[in-house]
Image (cartoon, rainbow, N blue to C red; front, side, top):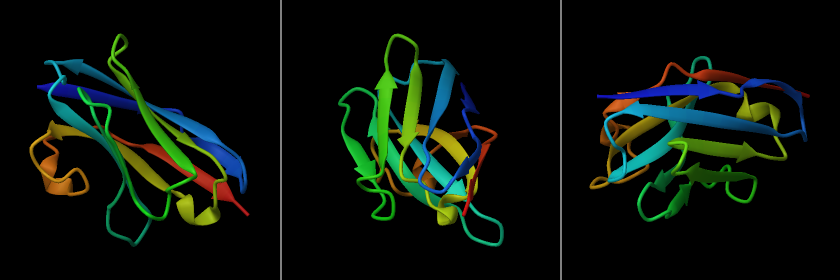
Length: 124
């Protein structure tokens, strides 16, 4: 089992920045991909970004490319999502997830473990 705990969400004005953290515990995630998804009210959960834990290869949705940066700290077993130039449409509940690095990183079905989510609200 892998436990994931997100933190770092909050309320920010448009154009501002936030950094989300995802702390993993339990079994090793060395061979996993760790991803961020988000879900706004009335909308489906959507892929935001992912990182292969062993390779460091990163993936981004077009909507966040050049604004968001995903990274990981192996020693702390923690993934980060640096979000810059935030827009009101980025408002959502952001989830961290982990799954085997053998399936498409943008597919929610890849991920076996999910955190509880952290709320990000961007005001205009």
